[in-house]
Amino acid sequence: MEKKTKSVYKEDESLQTDQEVQIDGKEFKFNSKLADAIKHFIYSKKKQSEVAQKIKISSESLIIFLGSIQSYNINELWTTNNILELWDAARELENPCLLRSCERKVGEILSDENFETIYKKANLYQSHVLWKTRSFLQRSFRSPKGNMSRTRIFTYEDFSYFLNEGFLNAGSDDIVLRSIFEWAEHNETQDQNTGIHKADGEEQEQSLKRKMDVETSSQEDDPPEGTSSKLSKLLRATSCGTATLECLQELSEHHLCNKDPEAKLIISKVLNYKLDRNTHGYWPPSLFSKDYHHVAVVADQDQINVFNVYSEMWVRLPKCPLHTQITNVTVFDNELYVISSAGFESLIFVFRNNKWGFVIDLPGRNFIVISKGNLIYFIDGTSSSVKCVSPRETPVLHSEIKFPDMMRNPESAIDFDKSILIFCSTDSDERSAVFCLDVPEHKWTDVGSLKGSSKNLVGFRNETNYFSLQRDGSISQVLRKQDESIGFELIKRLWSIQSSLRGAFIYSDTLYIFSNTPIECSSLCGILGVFWNVVYWHGEQNASKFVECFLPFEALRFSEHLYTPNRLLLLLGSGSGRLLHFS
Figure 1 (tube, rainbow, N blue to C red):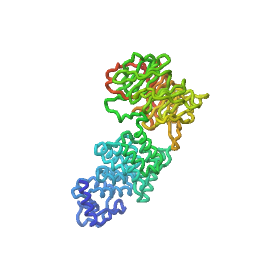
Figure 2: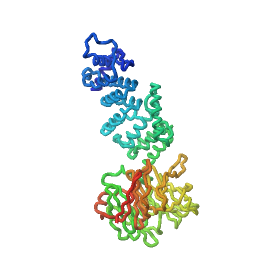
Figure 3: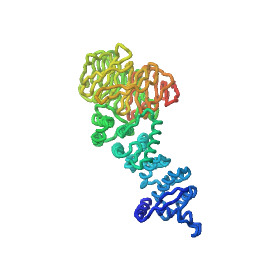
């Protein structure tokens, strides 16, 4: 109906002339239909002789007039344009009661047809109507047919909010990514802070000043940034897990990516992951059906215990008769591989179809084990080499890579992008040497050093972002710079003791950590943009490794349930925590 009303109004508009209406002694020009309606409202109960030529009304009477919306709808007088004219007048009069009444009416008439006009004006005025527009958008995006083209006119703050809260029900990551670039293109010709076309100079400047004052007070650490930097922030806020190769390749060549190296790097990282998924060896949750459950796996002496992070239930997998002392666990092609010590050699088994199968035996023990791409890498400090095992091929022992001359005393290793980072102890506990093994080229690079000890260092990732966690609680983000060098940026220190870490991973904004060292319930808390909560498990036995995996539901359903696992669980959110002990 609103569409029809507008078309009737526009067709007739050229025949109308503006009339002056005096509100609280101040002159305003309204279109003739609106002015006539106000005049009729004022003088309807007066005699003809008492009707003045000039239309005069008080703010209080105008508020009553606003309440007569049903009466004037009959003659199609209560259009979007009419209400917006009254809103402009209320703003100029600075009468709070009249302004609230106008804004209430604006919220009531909000529709698909007039949304863009009202949204822009509400942002210009920084009005309470913005709350109405955001609620309207939330309801709109809940629908499978949510109009994503609307995102073009969003302010940066609104777009970021809807992305972070997951309100954009677009159906695919392709649509969301393209809408972000369309938004950035649209804002190239607009004021980058307000998202409104550069017009109405004084009003715009005042609105911008108010906006910048708010941003300055709430984001003291953030310098003012242009569209390019906001583009990269929006790209980080969205999940690109299911975006198609075609879409990513198209956007990587977008002219905005050429202008913004940061945005280019984000798209390139996701594109490289898609092109080299086998090299990365990473299985994002979006790739799994509901038959698979996200689990945490702990190897403890000769047992494998599994924690279902969704149901919070511990189970124990069937025991392999040849497991004597499990020294390591790894996940390859989303299958669980266990390394068991047998004298001076190690036996490798795979858990497949709810039973254990033998893979290979290797000379030596106490390997650092990490899966990457098409191989499982056994880093052996004794022989100063890396043994490469290919479970899919025959022979299983694929090759052996010698350490570079300067590399000795490996302590730990983590997955990073298309590489394996190996951390080695040095003569000083203050620094650890770091070497990079590229996959699959198997080329060595001396990365430099990491501050602190690398003993018991573990790694975890949040999709395309990689992190290291040291035994002293230091969390660092691992970064590949634009010159292809690798660096470590310290983010936070979670504790002050030395913890014998066995593994860590992020699931649903929670960092899960397993250690052989108890820890006091003190100051563990989340890190903004990385994870919100920390769950710390302490195993009383000497667990060897803690990894995440996706296991079929059938494998969990027929496993032995552990209702009272022997664990110390420390669960802490931001600012509060509780300590639970299961005996």
